Amino acid sequence: MLDVLHTVLNVGLEKPVRLLHVTDIHITEVSPIDETWQQELMRERAEVFIKEGNYPENTPEEYFKEAIALAKELDATLVVTGDAYDVYTEGNLKKFKEIIRGEDMMFTPGGHEYQKQIVRTLEEPNGYGAKMEAQLKVQIDEFDIDFEVRTINGVNIITANNALDYFPEYTVNRFEETLKNGLPTAVFFHDPLDDRLLNVTEAYHPNVKITKEEYLVSHRMINTLKHSPQIISTFSGHHHTSREYLCDQKTHYVTGGLFKGACRLIELK
Image (cartoon, rainbow, N blue to C red):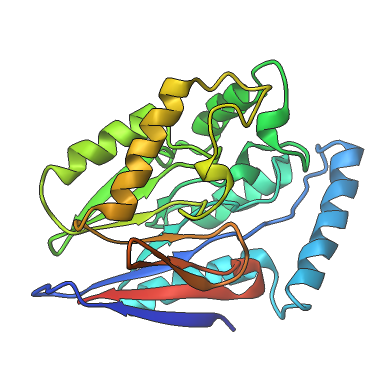
């Protein structure tokens, strides 16, 4: 059974908006065509999440299906903020796409969608991150993984990609263009605003050619998210534990891992 946190935010809407936030599902499936080392890795990783989740009653994919059903029952928009599967395997991709087929949801990735092994993707040489990003956009073409906005009952609901520890220029430009409509805005992404890697300088990742200008663009968006009165709040995952934190006297929210059964029902009123 899902452990549903309930967050109510008063925005002054004529008609409320319901959102169901899930994150960090960490599906750990393999296919017979996956290599032997991948099959062994997924067995090891499944044990990690079983232990971290204190031996949860359901598998990650069962919790994901339950969350989809709950969103329909509550007439809530389902928003998924990444690490849907643990690393890239044929089995993980197949299972994820089977579950989302024909379902209505918003989605932005976490760092694990970019990985083939459990290492920091940005530390891989030879343009690994860019290659995986191009592959991901082909494999999960049901979504614009960098940016999506839905305007529901007078509120912008945005998913924005910061899975590689910064907001890319395309995402920032779309975000800033959307804010011109002046509507209150809730933003969903994987890494919380207070995550240390999201707030580092361009020198942090020596093996990746992220320029100073790219980091300045990213930090422009971060500053808006922290300080703009137009932003209702932000919702993220990554840390596998639900919590709240303050930026500029505004409360922001982290939702725990769905592999533990955690999710968050958000009501904007």
